[in-house]
Image 1: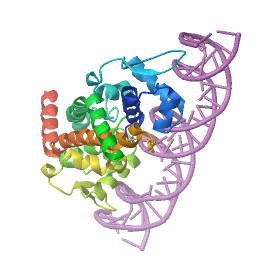
Image 2: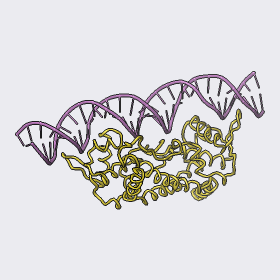
Image 3: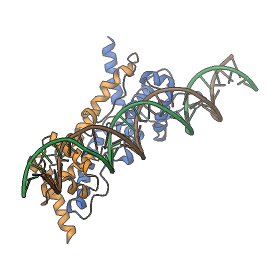
Image 4: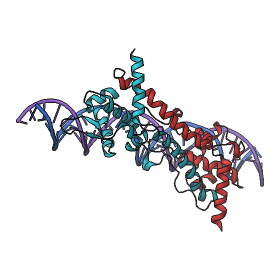
Length: 146
Length: 146
DNA sequence: TCTTTGTGTAACTATAATGGTTACATCGAG
DNA sequence: CTCGATGTAACCATTATAGTTACACAAAGA
């Protein structure tokens, strides 16, 4: 891998707009703020819908939060967009040689550390709510406007 | 990304062998334990050399630790194999619209949380030394042998 | 010195994820 | 019924990964 997909940052961007924006959040409108294609936005909104974070007005259009902004954490968003396969951040090489003492036992030992590292990261994401993030964002916007 | 490359787990495997094995660690020998191609092993050893973690006996062959096993952490190994681009785990979507209050400010706000999450993960990796890992591994090997 | 063994790399391959794009069926409000 | 928006399918180009063959070169031992 090189990096965790920008689907995550785009998803956060989308939800921030859904929370803050006064104009209706169509995929066209969001795409202009994110600076990408409306289809990319719709695909990510599809993930967010599946996770129950938003609902979309069919036909007429527009994306709206389905939960309070302080009930949505960055971890919820991270999980919703499935940026890591099967929820596992680290990929362990497959089928090390079971006839070698190292090959036979390294996986279980190293996996423990990998999972701890992953959990530590996810725990940090879980500590930040959309509400907090948007509050920080609004402050920045207000101060830079002056 | 889907997952962090198996280069990391293979590198840990290689260093464990270098520490524990009585036979000389040629790329052939290591490849049999890892269950892959010797060239894959040599490439990763190249990363470990660049990071100063091992040295290789040229011509005659064999990889050896260049530091004490309790001086090498999983974070050192993780960094050595460059599994994440430019050291940044998260990819932020490029050029959000600066004319939108959200687009203009989301990056700096979200990046803070991303970096905290990344640091939390790396901190966990830094807490585990090769020595500890190999000790756990040896215990497992001894108990499963009986 | 010559042979053998292993390293260091280049070059090429297949596979998969990502991000982008066009196209179109369908939904629902006015 | 029309218009605007969604939900998807079907592509495409780019890139990372992992694997493979090939070969020049290093050094140890006969």
